[in-house]
Image (cartoon, rainbow, N blue to C red; front, side, top):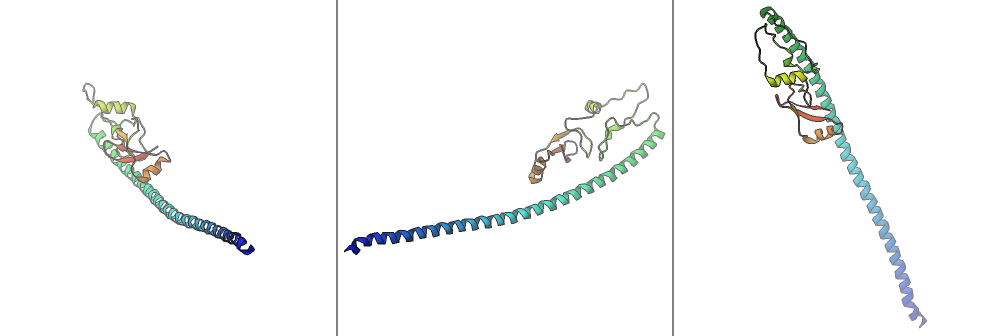
Length: 189
């Protein structure tokens, strides 16, 4: 009889012990599973980011190469334009009395050619009319955003950012600009 009265307590103790063991085992398995998921997710993210960083480094090196080649070709073009201007100046100086080239009032950009730096001085008595917009631009020599490196026009405006590359340039305070005269897009601080 004693056994019958103790049997429920013994069963309850045994079941309770097994439940605690099962509970501890489940908790450990969930912890292990969570740790594996974190490790696998981290590995996948590292691989993905590593691939993207490699791609960005390749793009950056390609852009650097392109910028260097553009700078070199721009320097060559500037030299060719200077030779042509000198030839024209010599030809016009011998053909047109009073022709003289004024030195530029604003130093041109290293890769730009300023077409407004040359003026024909008319002999006394003749009146030469100039476009008022060109006179205003020539007097101050600057616009709010500088001038276009392609055509040296002062008619420049800020352009909208488009794409990941231009958003990346935002980190270095470099903004896109567009020339309204020749539609050339360029970047500047």
